[in-house]
Structures are given as C-alpha cells and as structure tokens.
Image 1 (cartoon, helix red, strand yellow):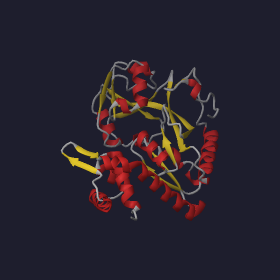
Image 2 (cartoon, helix red, strand yellow):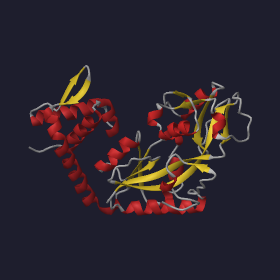
Image 3 (spheres, helix red, strand yellow):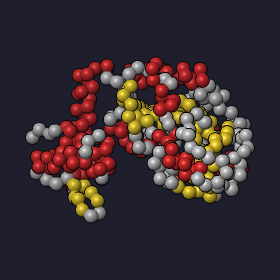
Image 4 (cartoon, helix red, strand yellow):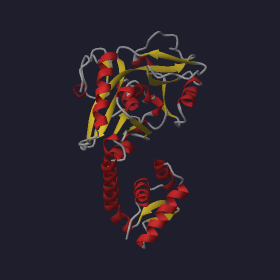
Amino acid sequence: MDLDVAQVRAFIRAAEELHFGRAAGTLAISQQALSKRIARLESLLGTELFRRGGNGVRLTEAGRRFLQPARHTVAAADAAVAAAVGKDRPLRVDVWGHLYAPMRTLAQVAGRAGELALGHGRDLPSVTAALLRGDIDAAFGRVHPPLHTGLTHRLVRLEPVDAVLSTDHPLAAEPALRPDQLRDGVLWAPGSLDRLDFLHQFTDRFDIRNRAASVNLGLTHFLAEVAADPNRFSLLPADVPLPETPGLRSVPLVNPTPLYAWSLLWRTGNGHPGLTGLTTACAEEAGRSRWLEYDPARDWLPEPPENHPRHGGEQ
C-alpha cells in the first residue's frame, strides 16, 4: 500500500485542528479539497479516521493509532525533499502577533539574512507546533514562558509601547503618561486577555480593573473602536504605523516605559544555514539601532528581569 503524502498531511492537520475549515486554511487549500484527500486516504486504508457529527469532528480509534506514525511519515518525506534540494532552500519563517506588525522588524534585516520564505501563524501555540513538526524553520513574534524544551529562543528587540486613546479621552492632551494614570480607563483588547499575555500582565501590574475585549478584525477596525469611546485606551509598539483614524491620539508611556519583547524561535538542532544569517543580521541591527537597551529603573518588562539583557546586552 503506497501512501500519498499530501493525503497524510491533510489528515494530520485535520487531526490537530479537529476542524476541516481551519486545517484547510493552514494548507492553503479549500475545505472541499482537504475533505477529498482525507476521504481517499480512508478509502485506501479501508477504515474511517474521523467521526463527523453535530458536535464537530473527532478522531476514531483507528485515527488515533494512525496519527503518530503519520507524523513520522511526513517528517521523513520532508527530510528527503530537503536532502535532495540541498542547502539552497529558503529559510521558512512565520510571524505572529499581526496587530503589532512584526514584519516591521523583519523587514529591516531581511535583505541581509539571505533568502526567506515568509508565512503567517495564528498565535504562539500554532507556530510552536509548526516548528516542532518541521513545517517551518524559524518564527518571529512575542514569546512568553513556558517554552517547549525542543525550541531555542533568541531575544531580538525590546520596543517601547505607547498608549493609544480617543482625542476626547481626559488624558489625551498630555505629552506623556505614566501607566498608572490609565487606571480609571477601559483597556480595549483585540481578543480575550487570557490569549494576550502582554496586555494581561500590564493590567495586573498597573491595576487596570476595567477591561473589555473586541474581535480582531485588523488594526484599522480596532483603532476605530478605541477612538469611538473617550474611556477606552489600548497599547501599541511606538513604531507601529497608525492608519489615519479620526479622533485617535498616541501618547508615550514613561516612568516606567513598557517594553514589548520580540524574539526569534527555532527548533533546537535545525541546521539550516539561513538561521545563522538571520540571527547575525538581527544582532547587527540590534546593535546599530539600540534595540536591546533595557534599564530596570526606567523600563518595565512583563517577564522576570533575569530573563532579559540589561543596558544593551544580548540574551
């Protein structure tokens, strides 16, 4: 029996997502195409791999037994392709945290880092899974512990964060704000705070008790919601280019200045030569643009200070 790797890959993604639409999206194919691949695989194997019903999709017992060997099969196929292609394959890099525009930072080093094939992960857990499966070589975004033991972490940039608020907000005219001055406002978040670690820790640290969540429909929509209410505010890295949203103001935060930590992740032991080029380019730009400056008397990081550099050092 000869297995079709595309069909096996479709099964793995569907098994991980337990949702055919989301699984199809990660493979950049239609849901109909994914369903056909899985149906052909089930026909070849002579058994059902999924139960489909009103409560969603779940694996059958045969599907659970097949999952781990299927992962080994796809990993071996990918390794064979990589061996045949050689070292000229582009470095596959995913980014996440799209509201905070991670591509701004990668764009400043991409030209010196060799050939990159860029993708977009949904969040840190999905990117972590892709790294461990070998679907991508590296990833860039905000990292917070705990991390998987099979991943290597390199801090790239500590970026000051500004408050964004309505021009009708009581503090909108201030040239700068302390985070604790926002205590009586409403933090407007682009999703549930339990999935937004930085904002969650900010509200805890500075006693922001009024919190509300929106639906992440992109930066323009999100900022329009902030501007629409004089009690709302949110946080964005200082260098994020803001759309022309009427009634919105960005104000620096000081004493302390919150810092948003951007990092690279890769699977420990990944020998792609492009990783060296990318990490070297990031380190060079960090030194030139003072990306890694941190003064605990002036700045605030959600993570314990011992996990981060001081005064321009590098992790």
